[in-house]
Amino acid sequence: MGGVDGVGEQGGPVIGVVGGSGGVGASCFAAVLALVAAPAMLVDLDCAGGGIDVVLGVEQRPGARWSGLQVAGGRLDPADLAGGLPRAGGASVLAADLATLDADAVLQVVAAAVSLGPVVLDLPRADTRARAAALVVCDLVVLLARADVAGLVAAHAAAAALADVRVGLVVRRGEVSPREAAALVGVPLLGVLPSLRPGRFALDPGRPPRPASRVAAGVLAGVAAA
Figure 1: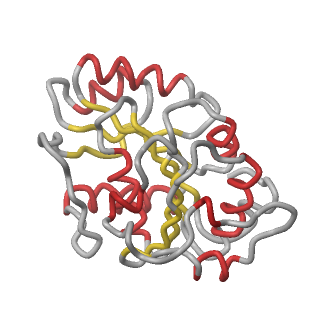
Figure 2: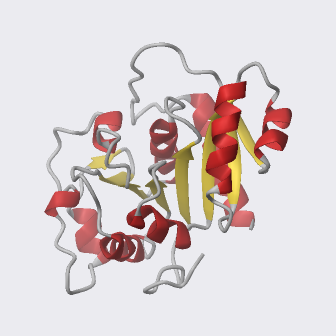
């Protein structure tokens, strides 16, 4: 992990999660990853995603969102940061409720959070300054893709935009085998998830889905081994 503003000097790993295309459940997997890694901090950088707190069903719980953080002109105290956020399971959750995020603020948040344990970043697919700053400090970026032609073409393009980052692929089952999918995208295969069912998916922080939890545990073990 990069040594930006103290990030990476101690504490947990930083793992980014991004979808190779829309509708692959990247935010849901980021949430499961944070729950499995608990105590962890889940940081929402996807301003167009509707809020990671909504994904976890904690949007009514008190605590700061990005709009409530005061990060300009100083360093965040890790304990104050974690203590001021809503929680889901064993994870502290910083949800995005702004149209854009400041890159320096992102680095300050991550620098504070890593001293407490693992940090999971729900990354946007769009190439923003905040995303670029976050990628610098990621130990691993998990790229989610549908195992069909359109999904893999999109994932290949997404992987090309992550050329300077360690990337691994999590595939949702489809018409292409997981190993063929990884070969087509050009990044190592980390795990396989069931295909998404139609309709809205509700994530229960107390009972995250077992297939995603198993893949998340494997991702965390791989990062720890590396």
